[in-house]
Amino acid sequence: MAPQKRQKKIQFLTFDETKRLLGVIKDKRDRAIFMIAYRHGLRASEIGLLQKSDLDFKQLRIVCDRLKGSHRGVQPLQADEVKSLRSYLRARGEDHSPVLFPSNRGVGISRKRLDALMKQYGKLADLPPEKRHFHVLKHSIATQLLDAGDDLRFVQDWLGHANIQNTVIYSHLISSSRTEKARRHFLKLPRF
Image 1 (cartoon, one colour):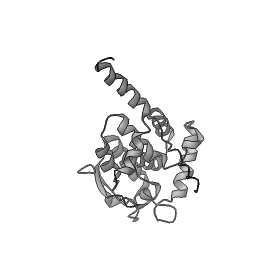
Image 2 (cartoon, helix red, strand yellow):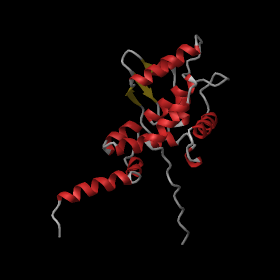
Image 3 (tube, rainbow, N blue to C red):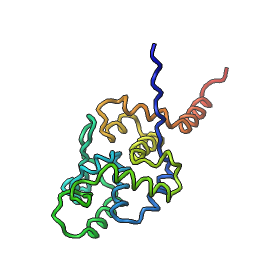
């Protein structure tokens, strides 16, 4: 019998770590990138796919194209996201690139560059080295939404997961919240 492959531990940021990370990012483009990736649970490659036309400032929405079999979706933008995006676009000036976050070559910013930025800003924010990977942002919003009391179906929809099993993995990561909820629940039950 072959040995079972050990699953890699999912890394995610606490709310305080997320706040520290976003707090050290002063560059307007990078701040917009990290805020959008975190809030909407986007992978690095999905950030590179974003087009300026995916933003709707009148309706305060963003179109999120997903990869890896996930569903495309339209999500609301929060006021701080709109402010960050507008500030970035003003600083970017007039150009003819349809890409929201272009590289120096004019194509979407690469996964490699985003991971390098995460390492740079993660170090500035004093994040543990194992949490200095761009994909940690997607894991962070998932766990934080569940920890805040949102249900699995909402988080599944928010992340664009086609299969609920891809979302369920996050429910096991919020044990501190689960422990506290269990204690409160069992206090209400009869004692044996």
